[in-house]
Structure formats: structure tokens, C-alpha cells
Image 1 (cartoon, rainbow, N blue to C red):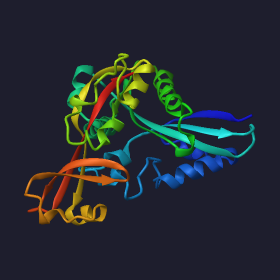
Image 2 (cartoon, one colour):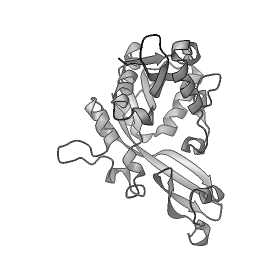
Image 3 (tube, rainbow, N blue to C red):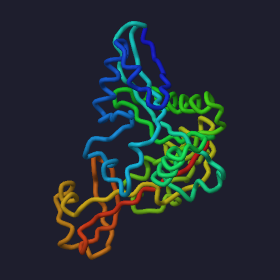
Image 4 (cartoon, rainbow, N blue to C red):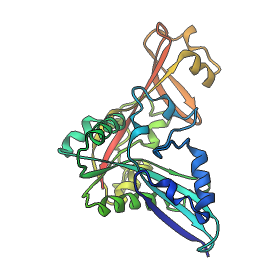
Length: 271
């Protein structure tokens, strides 16, 4: 019989759980990231996370880790199933959340933490399920663990700026998120899988934000992802769609400054 464990690791405490029984799972987690001394994740290139525009406040945040692992017995080696990360913040006005995106809420959380402002809510920053563990309900379990993290410190809400899978479809990447992200099926549920999963868990949709993530590339870097040379036929400040690792991004290519900027939207939900 296989045993699934969900670990809640407090900020800056991930290394204290690096025991023999968890070693295999945590070795896997460590290989996914370069974990700095403060235990916050820094993605390996060419992850899109390494292309975020602006100061990388994420690496200085206090992070709550939610780790799902599997063992065949209580004392056997463990395998990583997935993980999620949260941070803590003080939210004074929930209605203003939709004026912010992932990038700006991370910046605000960092600012509050550096000033010692007492938090009253958790922000879910992302969930990752291992490819070999998908279709087993791991995402639901990790999101539920995020909610437990919030309740354990008497927070009433977990707010999540969801980056929807449907945003990276070729047919959607150039559209406003309001044109596809919040559409519903005939049965009344949301068409997007990730949004549907959260609302099935009881999440409330608060609204959308078009500018949640901003990624930047040089024109030379874009050439690495496509066999075309955009500067030969794309007008200055025109839009161009590229495919990276099976996902589609539509951004603005500025041939004068040799830059390519992509804005990715989100849907805010509250648990």
C-alpha cells in the first residue's frame, strides 16, 4: 500500500525536513530549483520565471511550502508528487486585488514583510504537479493544503492569482482574458480546467487582471525559440506569437530596441 503525505513547511524551514525518509523526494525538489539559504525557489533557465521583468522580489519572500510525497511504507524512501508555495500578506481591501497581478502582489508582500507588517491572508503563488503524478487529484490536495496553512495561522482567506492553462492556447494568447478565461460550459462550470478545479473546491472568482506577469526577451533570444527572424518582416511595435515548450505567447516585438515583451493575465480567486 502506498502512503501519500502532505507536508506543511513553515517559512525558511524546508531544510529541517531533509531527513532520510524524505531524502529522495527532497532531492527531486532541490534539483528543480536552486534553493538559496532562505529556501526560496529560483528557477533554472529557460524557465519563463527567469525572464520576469522588474526586481525579483520573489527570491526574498518568506515562503510556506506545501509538499506532496508518496512512500510505500512509513520508513521507505519517498517520491515527490507535487508542491505548492504560499506567502503571507496583509489585505485591507479585497476589492482592490484585481488591480494587481502576480508580479505586483509579490512586490507588495515583500515590502510588507521587510517592514514587519502583520499579515492576515495567504497568497498562493503557484502549484506544480509532477508529470508522472497527474490525473491523481494532486493539485486539489495541494490547494487544500494551502487552505490548511492559512487556517493554521487564523487567516480567513487564501487568495490566488491563477495563471490559466487556456491563456497559452494558440487561439487565446493574443486575446483579452475576458474573452476566454471566464467563459462557462453548458453545464454552468468554467471552461478552463484550472479555474474549474478551484471553483469545485469552493473558490470565489473575484475578477481578472490583464497584466499579471510580464516577461522580457532580447530579439536574439527569440531567435532561439523560432526558426524565423522576426526583424526581417515584423514592423516596430507589432505583435508576434511564439511557441515555447508547447505553450503559445503573444508579445510585442520592438525591432528598434531589440526587445520582446509578453504580458500574461490572471484570474483572482479567493478560498
